[in-house]
Amino acid sequence: MKVKDIIRAIEEFAPASVQEGWDNSGLIIGSPEDEISGVLVAFDCTPETVGEAVREGCGMIVTHHPLIFKGLKKIIPGDPVCDAVIKAVREGIAVYAAHTSADKVRGGVSFAMAEKLGLRDVEILSLDSDETGLGAVGNLPAPLPAEDFITLLKKAFGCKVVKVSRPVEGPVSRVALCGGSGAEFIPIAREKGAQAYVSADISYHNFFTPEGFMVADIGHFESEVEITDILFSILKKKFPNFAVRISTAMYNPVYYF
Image (cartoon, rainbow, N blue to C red; front, side, top):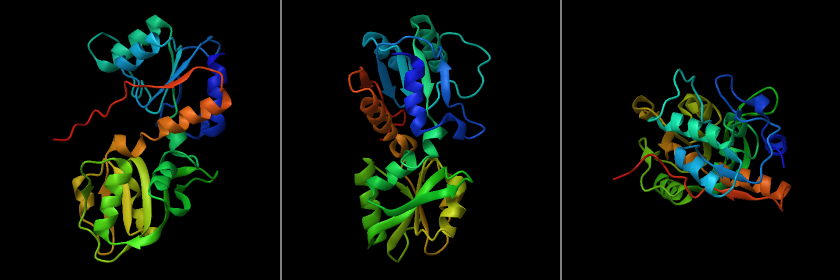
């Protein structure tokens, strides 16, 4: 198996060409022609992830978040990103990321969020001209009081706590979502008739919401981590007899006390 075979399978689902202009989805380390004997799927590429790939004999790591996101001016030991880059290069591990490419397709990150909540009639929230886009919006099977909706969020996404604006007084029936940092889509969520918008990395001032609308921040990791199972399933279905693993070294870098 070659790196390019894995890339082809992933990009049938999430083409790198649809990624946002500021993103760095795609092959980050390695050559498409590299021969590999296994793939490790993870959320982030950390030094621990690379170590796990080496131990398990996986010549390629597929993640959601790009290992190299912003430009690196120095690659020296002691920084987690640099440590992962150094180790991956030394060990000959290819690294690929499906970031906004997997955010923008139907069945991607935000659609996985919608499925966890059981939403129906799900559509892309912020649609591009080519039928891709960021976020999702849909309807709950039955309207819920705001407090019950918050309980549903915590259960569905495994959250200890959820940051919310003032809960709406009426029922929540229509919900908009965006995995990761999605505060910019709050106005669109309102335009689409949602009573609740669920995302992550929402800043303080966005919690001042108008009557009949609320926002909920469930955490960045919590909103997106489902993509690892999606990528794993795609590769396992395409290559049922090939060694594809989900990382056991994944962890949320945000701790709650």
